[in-house]
Image (tube, rainbow, N blue to C red; front, side, top):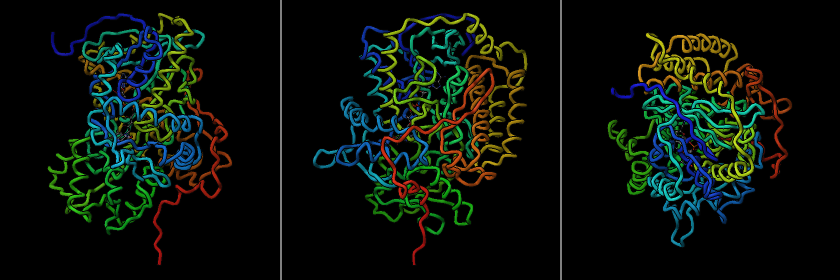
Length: 580
Ligand SMILES: Cc1cc2nc3c(=O)[nH]c(=O)nc-3n(C[C@H](O)[C@H](O)[C@H](O)COP(=O)(O)OP(=O)(O)OC[C@H]3O[C@@H](n4cnc5c(N)ncnc54)[C@H](O)[C@@H]3O)c2cc1C
C-alpha cells in the first residue's frame, strides 16, 4: 500500500468520557476523570501523538501565572487578570483557577516536573506582570510531556493517536452524544459515542500567515488549526469574545517568543532602536501590543529584546534556559544568523492573529466548572474562554473539566444521535477525495490566510472587514466545490482548512459586532476608536442559531474581587513617559 493511501472504512466505539486533544489540558482532564471513577472508560483522542503534541511538545520555560502562597493571593491574581483584560472577565472562573493552581503545581512537582526553588526550598517566583509576582521558572521544563505521559500510562487511559476529530454528535434534545473522527494515516472514520466530551484542542493558531512566509511557522503549535472552535460552533455552543484576538511580540522570522519573561527578571528589557525602554512592563496584553505597534510606526523601530548590557555569566544562564528547555531550535536559529546576545540585540516583530484564551480571551464560552452551553460538553485550555490562562490554566481547568465531566457521565446514560448526522459528516469529510481534479488544500489554505492578513490584521477597518468577508466567501466556494485530497495526509490538511475558514468567518463576524475599541491592538477599530463602557462593557457571544452566525451581548458577572476606580486602567498606562 502506498503511504497514507485512503482506506474507505468506518467503525464505532463508546466510552464514558471522551477527551479530544492530548496536549496540555487534555492529559490532565483524562487523568482526573479516570481517577474520579477508575472503573469508567476514558478515551484521549489526539490528532498527532500524545507523547509530543501541543504547545508544550518540547517543554516549557516556566509557569506564567503561578499563584504561590507568600507571593500572591487568589484575590490579587483575579484583580490583575481583570485589569489586564479591560474588565471583561467573569471572575468566578479566574478566582477558582487562582485558588486551585497551587495544588496542581505540587501535583506536577510530584510527577517529576521541577520548579525553581531558592536556598530555603521555597518556590522562586519572578515579577513580570504589571502589579503582582507570578512567573515560576521550570529548570527541567523539557520533561513535562514525558512526565505527563507516564501518568497516563499508569492510570490506563485509552489513548488514540493520529485521530483528528471533525464534528460533535448531539441528541435531538441537545445533549452531547459523542464525536466523529478521521484517522490521519488511513482516512478511516471512527465514531465515538460518549456520555461527556471535553474539548482541549488548543488555540486557533493557523489563522494568520506568519511574516516569515512559512505556513507552519506559526507562533502556536501548527497542529492547532482551530478545529475545536469550529466543532463547538457547529455543535451550537457559544463562543466568547472572539474579537479579542491573540497577537504577540515575537522574535522576527523565528516567530517564537523572545522570552522577556525569562530574561526580564535578570535585567533584560524591550527597547527601541535608540536603546530606550518604551513600555513599563513586558507582560503581554492588548495595551502592551498597541504600544509595540506604535513604536514600530514611530520611526523608532525596530523593537528589540536587549540583554547585551548584562554580565556574560548572566547571559550564559539565560541562554541555557532559552536554548535548552522550551525551544532548542532557538539557539540554532540565532547561531545561523550569527547573533550573539553578548553583542547583539534580538530583533522582534508583531505576530499573525489567532484565537486563544491562554494569552488573550477568545474561546469557547465556559463557566467556572468548564461547562460550555451544550449539556455534557466541556472545554479547557487555550480554546476555553477563561482569560490569560497559559499552561497552568490548561492543567488546572483541565482538571476541573475532567472531574465535572466524569460526574456528568456517572449521572447520565448515552444520548442517542441520528445516524443521518454521521452519514452527512462522512460525505463532507470524504468530499475532497471524491474529485478527480482540483485545488490542493495548501493552496486554499494559503489564499485564506493571506486574506486574513490583508483584511483582518488590526487596526480593524470596517470597509476592509466587509471586503474580507466577501473574498473569504468566494474562497469558501472554491474550497467546497473544488478542493482535492489525494491521500490521507492531504485529507487531514483539507479538513484543517475548513476549520481555518470557519475561524476566519467568526473573526470577521465578532469584530464587526463590537462597535468600540478595546484590548489595545487586539480589537482596535478605527471607525470606533474609543472604548465605550456604556454600551460595550460586556462579553460578546457568537453562536450558530438556525444555521446562521449570530452575535449577542452577555453581561459581565458581578465581580467577586472588587476593583477600585483608580486601578481599573492601570494596564492602559503602559507607555513610559519622559520625565525631566
Ligand atoms: C511558543 C509558546 C510558548 C509558550 N510559553 C509559555 C510559558 O513559558 N509559560 C506558560 O505558562 N505558558 C506558555 N505558553 C502557553 C501554554 O503553552 C498554553 O497555554 C497551553 O499549553 C495550552 O494547552 P492546551 O491543552 O489548550 O493546548 P495544546 O497543549 O496545544 O494541545 C492541543 C492539542 O490538541 C490537538 N488537536 C488539535 N486539533 C485536534 C483535532 N481536531 N483532533 C484531535 N486532536 C487535536 C493538538 O495536536 C494538540 O496536541 C506558550 C505557548 C506557546 C505556543
